[in-house]
Length: 212
Ligand SMILES: NC(=O)c1ccc[n+]([C@@H]2O[C@H](COP(=O)([O-])OP(=O)(O)OC[C@H]3O[C@@H](n4cnc5c(N)ncnc54)[C@H](OP(=O)(O)O)[C@@H]3O)[C@@H](O)[C@H]2O)c1
Image (cartoon, rainbow, N blue to C red):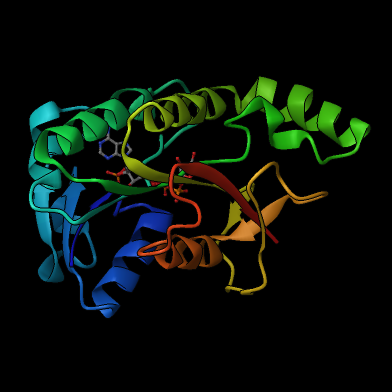
């Protein structure tokens, strides 16, 4: 299987790359600085920026599956997902590639907090999503809009805060909203869940919340 990975050099992207290589997949990545990528000798790297249409097209070329773990490197307005996800979608449409599994975040949809208590919902919405996570949340909303309108076989995995912690394996998975009182999950668990979606029809065409 040929897998193209966006955001492969990031914290979750490296975990996805490692898992794809372990599974024996042929991996192509888009990297701004491929020379510093720890798996550089085991993947095909396209050097470039995710906001560049040609670089995105080249990365997607020949893929059976696309994984996206892109995200801004700061909490400022970078518009990475706003620009890159529509480019990925149109490159996939042009090339007849159907399946994309993307890392999103809880907060991408208004209904994400529906299972929280009133107080918790107010705090997360007003003190987190509307303030310091304002731009990441806006980017994830844009990613959701681009994927859900794409006509592709998309899945957007929507975790709360990501931790660099060991996997626990016992996730809560919910298609409607973030599970009650959920606030964290390890990147390893998210990467394992994303890998488990390869060949799984259950969450195709859907966003899915995952959390400890
Ligand atoms: N942090 C959290 O608690 C949290 C919670 C829920 C969801 N999320 C979402 O999870 C996603 C990934 O998070 P993460 O912490 O695993 O990632 P990360 O370590 O911040 O890595 C981001 C990746 O995106 C790449 N990237 C950014 N701008 C790019 C551009 N213009 N062109 C090409 N590549 C670009 C980076 O490449 P370089 O190596 O070149 O910089 C890197 O590979 C994000 O979308 C984030 O919103 C995060």
